[in-house]
Length: 132
Length: 132
DNA sequence: CAGTATCCCTCATGATACTG
DNA sequence: CAGTATCATGAGGGATACTG
Image (cartoon, rainbow over all chains, first blue to last red; front, side, top):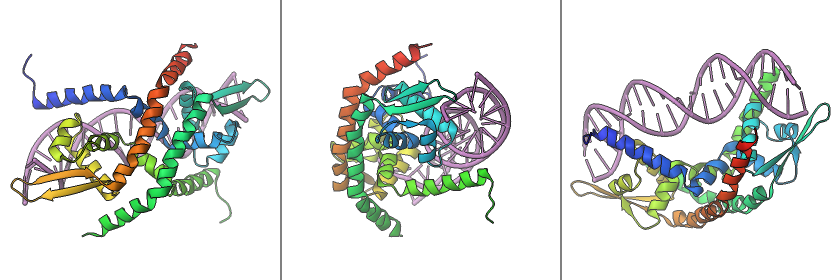
């Protein structure tokens, strides 16, 4: 069919664009590090390896589900290593891999900019909200 | 009451932590730039000002709702300026502010790391998925 | 200790229709 | 042209309970 509704065409464009975006490295990284728990875990592990229960304690407010799910994602992406010590009870340690460590400077750059410019952002917001 | 259920305590911890996180500049920035449309808009505007319709065309797949909503957020945060020319029909131009331009190096750092390391991430994923 | 399995519910997003 | 208003849905995340 050569005839498509406008809705159809828009839909197709969206799907195609989604596919394109999914293959964009920068967007992939952004999707990873912007996750609430990812940044917290990465930050917690920057000081050295931690056990599951440590992470659960340090990162107050994370549910077991999300902690496990996020750690799996990071392990899968090669950013974090998972080491099981088959004692009783078992002991599992998580640590940053070299790749994970390499990400630190980027995270730091984000942090730096944020801390240096957040006041301007907040000021802009107040101004914006103040205009009737 | 000094007595609380475990569920109650966990709930409280989560709320408190959420509040704490909301006030973290790095997380705020992360929340902003990680938005799918934010990064695309910022990137589109890095070449110079664009009209609403231009953005709508260049960023294929964005809905009017999300485009408008995202532009408003960026304007509110002082990253983007909105200029209305009261002709008939009206013309609205969007451009990066100085603050918005200042964000570019950070975005670039993210892009650089992503492009330089995405292969390792993909390789890690394949390895991970391959193990039974 | 370190998870897995399940249910549930909210919120963000998108489609659609309308407007100054 | 540049939006606003409304409705529907679906995916992400939390609470809870169970397990090797």
